Structures are given as structure tokens and as C-alpha cells.
Length: 446
Image (tube, rainbow, N blue to C red; front, side, top):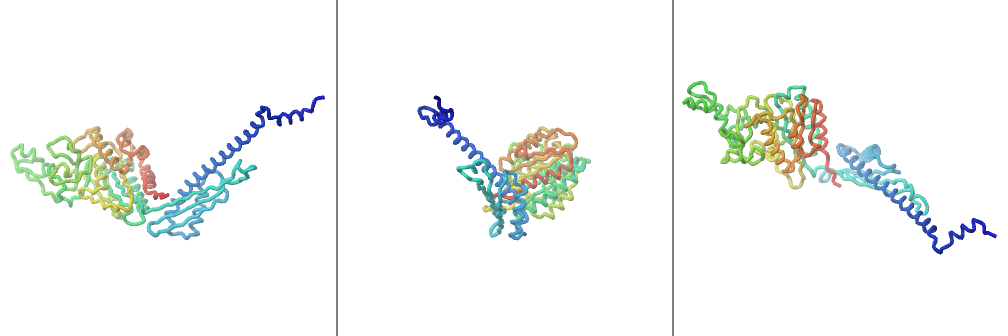
């Protein structure tokens, strides 16, 4: 008589003479358990990473008004903000701790702890229904200082399409942002370099030893014989040339390099670097020029926000475009040169140096050329030198007239994210706000 099938099945399972099914069943449960644990640990790891990002963002957001809040209000705001931006897996009972101190430098210290529900670890025999996750963040300001050079196109084409008005609004908004980012005077310095074909270093500097008067003397004066307007034409007609008094100079400076009659730039490329001017080396000096469309006088590094705002309000468009000279003087403003003095850097701080170059046109004229490609080649060298010096370079092209996208400005920017192509004047305002938000972010200490 045959045994019942259930008996056969039981004997089969108990048979150890070579059957692998029991081993397979056990291993299957082990593998499933391991996969389940991996899933839960991965979810916890992702939740922890997103918690850290949300905590950093919360601390940054609170840093602007932390000094004015009570401890309880700071915690309430922190909890509300964190819960509003956290996007990871659902957390159980997140607890936010936050404190503000200003003993040496202002800082916010935050921590967050919470639990995340498990899918597999909660099952027997592990019985772990939740896993703990935590994060911490310290936001400190005062350890890092910021220096910004604003190199701003003031050429004639800026009068079109509301560009100059938008630039003035955008620049004043940016100054407000940068002022707010400074806890103490000197935390943020700003220079403003209006440029056209030339820049203006201030006519009161006519006695300065860093000025080269060679070209200016040859083109500004009077001839005792005939109505000749240059020294060359006067002397060619056997006249005597008398240069005008230097006190009549309007303050304009053109690209530095070898003086006339040399028709090519200095072989030492002084227009492309920040070599200090030396009285015995004429190529290093800054050539005076009586340019009829001389822009406003530049302003070196300062935290005199009222005077900077006043300068911006007075900007008026005129003249041809030479981005290169504006860029060179923006760099000079950060290190000091000619009339510009850069305050000494404190070794107790880290410094971020930034140049923002805005222009609405392609290069049209410099000291030597009216050929765009020749001007561009020299400017690209300046850009490369600036970036090699560790300075962050933003470039903004305002193209409301259908010009081609400037390859030069794209290549000049520190990276692709720091080049902006705008097609309307209003975008200047939003772009400067974006840049301001980026460069004035507080330092995440840990």
C-alpha cells in the first residue's frame, strides 16, 4: 500500500542524501533579507543627504536676520523653513536644534535628527520599524571677505533700448545686496570702472608720475605758424609747437604700451597685465588722452555705498567700445595701480575676488586698432591672465541689436555658467541679482 503523498513530501524535505532544496529555501530567505536591508539603508542614506542639503539651506536663510531673533523664534523659523523645503523620504518627528553666536565671528550652528520608516527591517526577526538619520551644519560669516570690480560699458550704444537706465538700476540693486552681505566695514569692497574707448582716472592727477604725456603733448597744443592741430603737422610746416598745460587734461587714459610713433602695442604687453607703473619705463605708464567722450571718473575699492550710488546715477552713454581697457583697469582696481589703492588683505581672512564685465557691443576701437579681431586677441590675453591670478570673471553681453554672440566674452568668463547673453535691457536687472546672490552667499563652514 502506497504512503500518502503528504508523507512522501515530508520525507523528501527531511532527506539529506543530496537534496539542495532546503538549502535553497534558506538561502532565498537570506538573500531577500539582505536585499531588503540594502533598500532600507539606501533610503536612509538618501534621506540623510537631502536632510543635510535642507539643513544647509535653512541655516543660510536664517543667517540674514538671526541676530535679531530670540532663541525660541529662531528655532520656530528653522523648523518651519526646514519642513517646507525638505524633499526626501518621509521623516518621523524631525527635531531641529539651532543656535546663534557672535563671540568672535557671527555663526549659526544647526542640527537635525529624525527617523525614517523601514520597509523590510521592521519585519521579524529584525523588528526595526525605523532608522535614525541626522545632520549638522555651521554657517559662519566674517572668515571670508569679498572684493568686486564692476566694469561697466558707458558707450554711446548704451543709450538704446533703455540699457543705461536698466544698468543703473541693476548696479544699484547689486550694491544694496553687497552692502547687506557685509557684517562689518571692509567685509565687502567694490570698485566701479565706467569704460568707453578710454577710462577716466581723474583730471586732478595731472601731476602724477604714473602718467605718460608723450601722445597728449603731441596732440594738444598750438602752433606758432598756421592752424596746425598736431605737433607733427606743425613741425612739418616749420612751425614751433607748444603743448597745452597738463591742467587742461580731462582725465582720460588710453591703453598703455609704447608711445607714438610706434603703431603696434608694447612687446611687454603692459596693456594685458597689472605690472606696476615705473617712471623709468615708459611702457608701464598710463598714456593721457584728451578723448572727447571721456566717461565718468572711476572709483577704486570702497565701501562708501552712497558715493558709489551717486556715481552710478551720473553715468551717461557716449563714445566707442574698448572692453579691454575697462577689464584691465578692473583688474588693477583689485591689486592697486595708478590712482587706485587696494587695501591690504588681512591674513586672518580668506578673500574672494570678482570682476563683472558688462557690455552691449563688440569692440570697435583701442589705442592702436579699429579692427575688432586685433582688439579681441589682446583682450583674450588679459582675460587669461586674470583667471590665472585666481580672480573669478563674469561676462555679460547685452545684445538688443542682433549682434552675434561674442565668442570672446564666452571664453573670457571663468566658466560657461559665468557668461550671460541677454536680449533685453530688463534682463540686466535680473542677471545682476543672480550674480549678486551667488557671490554674496555666506560661507558654509562645515
